[in-house]
Image 1 (cartoon, rainbow, N blue to C red):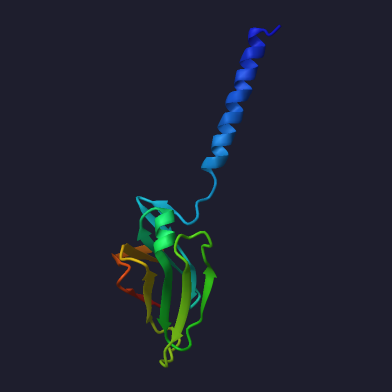
Image 2: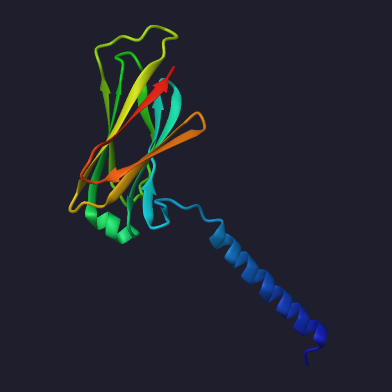
Length: 158
């Protein structure tokens, strides 16, 4: 026979188990994020030993963007002696991305500031709204256009 204490204890255990299950789902990290009808993916780059996040996005559901935008090519142009690398890429992004580093013939002097030119070109089956957000030193800049246009940003660095 179950007493009130047994029923309360069973109810308590059930509530705790349910809360833990919802907590585990809520704490699962999001990748290839879809927010406000936009899908975003973000390679993190190292340019002259500074991290720069380049979020590339397009408007639509994950499935729509994944089937419509075939590729986003991120081209970063810097002086000849500026070290560059890809720190991380989001493998779950709705938009496949590739990063190309172009080094100009200009040789940067020690301590000299420079512009890193970041351009994103989309290969898409149709024209849809698209954009990039560039984050460097805690500040972000958002640029919007569509997949028929190249989106470029000149980032002042040192």
